[in-house]
Length: 267
Image (cartoon, rainbow, N blue to C red):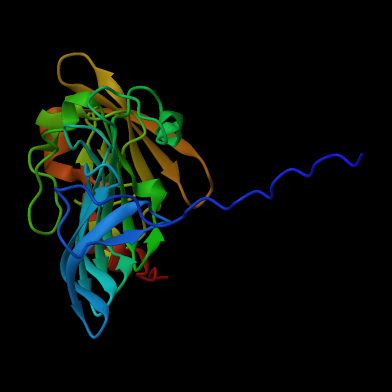
């Protein structure tokens, strides 16, 4: 007697999940991103502010569009009841242009966000400037937990305001820019390495990157200069008032300073 055949497997229904009541009528389900999206369409393309929700109705994020491409601010949140910020970016014609920010949840770790742990346990917020969609990670800012809610203030051009008074919020390997012609270190030496003021005039000075190493004493900060010319490094100390006068956070000031990087040197 021939064995009975097993019934053929049936394909599970792959349509969108049931729409939660908190999601707007007419919202569109994106199976790839697993989110509901709601907003206006113009000629079939997204336009204006769109809001996104996870399948269960929790807020996933918001983004602005022009003729179907992202243009303006976009924010994305961790999947929890507090809507903790996960990522914030600014787009211009579909490309990230400006700072891109990633942040932990208030509890620290989140499933699907494990890559953030590679930055170190002390880093809770990570900011990287972008230029026309290209990331510039060497100019990144690393904030500790105390810097999640309140970052270093800056002016309209991105220059830090009173940087020395906010260094307790930052973690080592945060990139800085020397915006003045020079600064005075703790041994009363004038240091001009990496000076944007000198480079912008084509004057001779080593080019490279300043990074924050750590806090020393009551009001002394350890910095390191990494030369782009020969790969060497220089370490020194600076007090808070001089740091405020001469330095700024690189991630905040990158777009303003970028034209300086292409300044040719005078012979």
